[in-house]
Image (cartoon, rainbow, N blue to C red; front, side, top):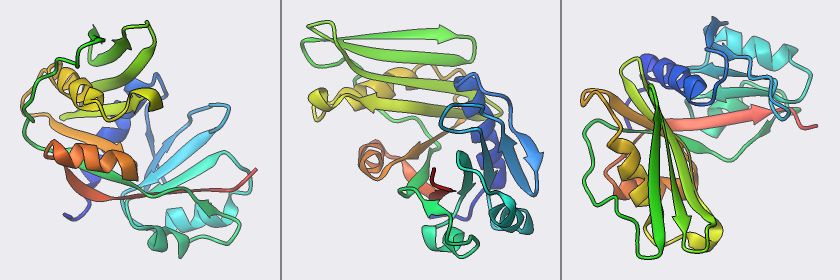
Length: 210
């Protein structure tokens, strides 16, 4: 695992906001703030490294639905916060400098489609009964190409749909030099590692329970 690249985190966060039609991140307290305004999340504060601004937020934020995110292991974030904060499952920021190879054709009985909207792309895989089997988004900005909300429905897992989806989205990348970035859950990490992705850093999240 390499040291954390703050520029990479900032570029990923900006591209993520674009992919999700969220406000652009703004510098705040040594990190970045995104005023998401969502029912389950009013805002998020993102930090590439621990700093006084993160400690200040941990001490002054009292309401739920505010997320603190740090590119570090759980123990490092927990040590900066009071017991009222609860950690969410650990994720990982992963990167892939080069393209990954493979066939984007889904298995028999599935149909893949890809839509583009400027710097954004959306892919879906539909099963023979018309049900949505898998879907995912991508966005390219600031020298990075990010993958976002890559989901395979439970009834359709372990059939290669996630791999086909990722490969289809990769083909929408305009700049071969754009660094590929995503955040992965523990389960997703194995899929991405099989495609040649590397863990860049742990991704810890804390929030105050409702």
